[in-house]
Picture 1 (spheres, rainbow, N blue to C red):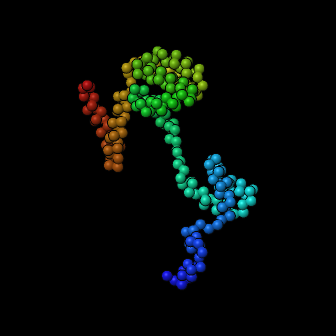
Picture 2: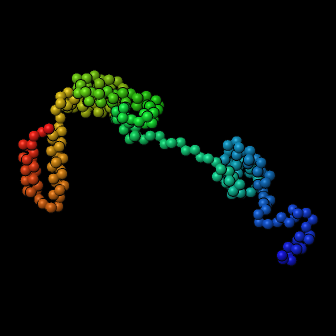
Picture 3: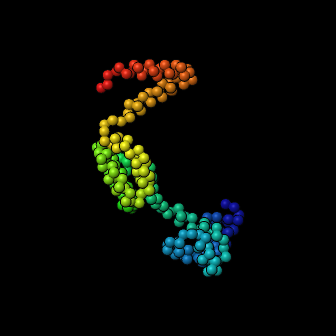
Length: 225
């Protein structure tokens, strides 16, 4: 024990006089205003800049940093509740284009909640489901009625789609009525693209042409299931 410690102990009249260390709180200009800060924090005022302005009106001459340091432990104790992000445009579009039976319970509830908040989206969903029924049942004779019904709604995007249908009306009606489709043609195009990718950087156009013609001739006599 050092001499200074002995002398300070001998001169102390109360135990409190010995409690002088760095861990002891020092007097601060903020002490008279801490009760006001606690009250304002409980009332929901948590902005240190606004509280600093209030205390200056009450006679406080200290710094803003002192107030911020005093409030920092309270900020750490606050629990920040973050609401889940709303579904995006692509997600809602996917729900709308999918068959309702293929949606899970969670997604169905989310989709129902979205539709309840937007009457235009609800109307659009109804027209999309009707068009899907026309497409799957090949009932193209109802397409004109469907277009007439869509134009009574304020849905510009759907109006653009119907205008495109009317530009090639006969082909659209045939596609939605008969069993014929362009599937074989699309399959042949994909097959040609596959051959082209296999020969990329290995041969020129004459060999590519021969391979396309030979594979087409070989598949021509293949019986279809």
